[in-house]
Image (cartoon, rainbow, N blue to C red; front, side, top):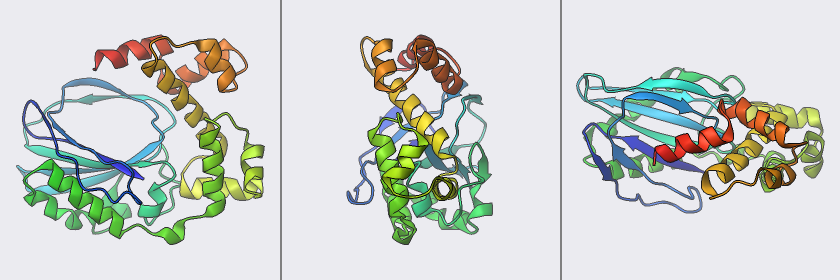
Amino acid sequence: MSCFWASGISGGEVAAPKAAVPKAAVPEAAGRETALLAGTVRVIPDTCMDIIIEINHTRQSISSRLCGLQDCTFMVEQGRGGDRVTKIAARFYFWSARLFLDLELGETANRVLDLELVQPGCNREFEPLFYHRSMGESISWLEGYLLERLETNRYNPNLYNSIDYLLRAGGNAVVKDICANSCVSQRQMERLFKQNIGLPIKRIASLVRYQNVWGEVVRRERFEIMDAVHRYGYADQAHLLNDFKRFHGIWPEQARRAALAWR
């Protein structure tokens, strides 16, 4: 249901050890200790939510923020400041964040919130992170922290059946069929999506479809656009290209070159 990433406070890159993972609850977990790179970075809609914890060793302070699900791309400037800072984060698939967070997600989409304001006392609970000697230790601790807050009573079978249908279809599904799969009215299902995910059904389906196309663009040696048009239910090539640019900000070939340049 979640995975982890981290940035360290010193130069170079050091692979962090894999943390112990309770497989039933958290399918994958991995971490990296790496220095922050200066420059402008494109942030694309990844159908995930993040909790980012910033440990400032210089000021002996901890802050945290919740990055809601986004449906647009934006550019951010990142670089090194004067303080010694470590960042560690938990990333949630769009369908799982609500199981760990005691808040409705309808007002979190396309927003970055101070986690202390929406989950009071969390920064104090994160203080053990000050004393860990490795990123692997911090990741393991954060896994345990989150699993203690896993609320299975928030699981709604109608919602998750619809999400399963949507994912299996690669996002190529209309709202009517998504609702019919769970025998739930569209009005009720829209309310469940807004409350538990933060975005409407149609927008989530579009994001899942875009992410499937992006996966093919960046992973395949040769991206066959007409095959993708057919596979994901686009009207034509122009429809796919414009939909991709709407979410990514640039055309597929430009996005592929930019991604490969980061490897």
